[in-house]
Amino acid sequence: MLLSDEGASVIARLEYHGAHPGLHAHSHCERSGLENGPSSIADLVRVPGSAGSHRRVVAYTEQGFWQKSLVFFRMHEPKGPLI
Image 1: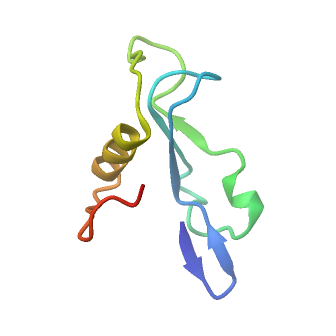
Image 2 (image 1 turned 90 degrees about the vertical axis):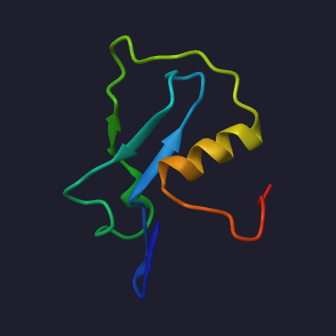
């Protein structure tokens, strides 16, 4: 999320869940980071798309998903795990 004086705006979100399987991100290049509030999370584009052979069945633990998220968002944990 991007925080500003006007509020918070979703830039991207990383997901892995049963409703539409496969590790994937949602973002929208033309609006992400510009639109504040709850509407900033709506109608984000899924990358990669929901069809295709990119889907992989993996049983992520909370820590495993957290580690994958850190790599995806190019972050690090200087003080150790948050969860």
